[in-house]
Structure formats: C-alpha cells, structure tokens
Image (cartoon, rainbow over all chains, first blue to last red; front, side):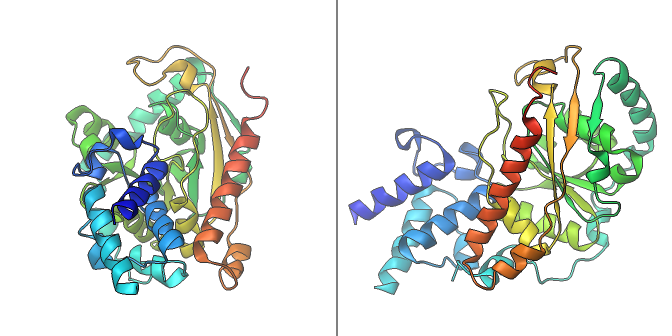
Length: 81
Length: 245
C-alpha cells in the first residue's frame, strides 16, 4: 500500500509539475499548488490510465489535498480488485 | 469509465441547460466606463505598444468560439481585447480565479475591461470548465489560457488537456493566438509596461467535426489530447519568426 501511495504521489507531482519533496500531502492543492479545472482533468485521466479507476462526481467534491486523492484512489482500486 | 466522453460530459455538466440569467451575474454597472477605457487603450495600443494584428480574418464572424492565446504578461488579455474590436469583445467572457478577482483594484479594472466570471476554483475540480460550458452554450465566446498559468520565462508552457475537452464536448472551434511583445514590455514582477511593439496573431480555427467523429472510435481523453497538441502546434507556428519583431 505504501508503494501505491508513492506511485500516486509521483503521478500527481508529474502532472502538477511540482517536485514530490515540495508537496505537503495535507495542503489544499487548489490554493497551494494552483490545481484548476484544466489540471484536474489530467489528474483524473492519469489515475484512470494507470489504475482504470473512475472517480465519481461526489468523490471528486471531497478532494482537497493529495492525501484525499490517495485515499479515494485506494478505495476505488481496492473495490475493483 | 473516465476514458469515455459521457464521464467528462457529466463532470463539466455539458448536458445541463444554461439560462441567460447566468451571464447577467457577470455583467457590471462599471461597464459604462468601457467605451472610454477602450478609447484610451486603443490610442495606447497604437502609439505606446505599436500594436500589429495578424490574421484578424481568422476569427469566426459570430460566436461561440474559444480564444486560446499564450500567456506571459499581465498585458496579454488587454492586448487581445484591443485587437479583436468592440463587437467581438462584448461577446467574449473570461474566467478569473477568486483570489485574484477579490483584489479591489484588479476587480474594478476587470469589470471595466472585460466580461469576467469569478470562479471559486478552490472548492472543486471543475467550476471553471462548468462555467465555460454554460457561456459557450449560451452562444458567447470564451477567453482561456491553455497554459493554465503565466509563463515566467516568456516561452510557451505545455498546454493543458482541459482546453481540448471543452472544445470537443461543446463542439466549439478554438482560435489559436500568439501574443508577442507583452513579455518584453511587462514581464511577470514588473508593475509598469515599457514601450514595446506588440503583435497579436490569430491562426486558423481548429474545428471540432473531425474530433467529434474520432471520439466514437478512440478514448475521449486521447482525442482531447490530440486537440490540445494541435493547438500547441498552431500557436507555436504563429510564434515562428516573431521573436525579433
């Protein structure tokens, strides 16, 4: 599971173009890292391409931080397995 | 599946009706000063910035369309507004994030200069794209920076795929635009523009018919990416030969 968390962190870091070491996993990604609609599309598509997970709209609304993305992705991947 | 068009259409609420009342909330009484503002700006554009407009005929005669320029200076949108003329300017809407819009001076300036939509992008992934969809469905045009942010070096940044998604799911053409000279005049961090020649080049629109067909056979995201790549290619080609103007 730690490996999965790291993979998701790397994926998001690559998309938002901020070094992993500089990302606070609890920080608000919209305020601190400038994530917007355009980047949001790429994060969701990246998770779909890598893990085949489809984050539903109500779950997307829960996303505020990297840890939220990791938690939701993990839930969906576990459900899929 | 998020690889399908249906998933993304739901996310950006592409199938929901849009009411004309939605646009009213983004209009302002300060617009009364807009003709005066642009009369002064047009003089400045001709004298101080020696603005040159290339490819004006490439802008579709009627909205909706997406104006997609590079972004390297706070002057960019003002220069495009100057270049497109009053009629098209009045039909053009732009998105401003809450934290920028809520600065008092910026807010007054934006309300006078443009039809600005205040977006609370700190709450959700999709408010900006949802608002843009509504505007386009109501037959207006959208100004959107495909780089998503201002370039600190003046060079082009990678374009974000959300622009391709917006165009593909609304069927609206994208007009590639390259703005040259604004970075030299007023790069990020400077507060006052230096006199400089500014060139605004409009490329041929990218129409969506072919891409809408491709969505039936390919993953939707791959089609959005193909549109975005084509846009990047066209903006880059408008840039060629302009560095020394």
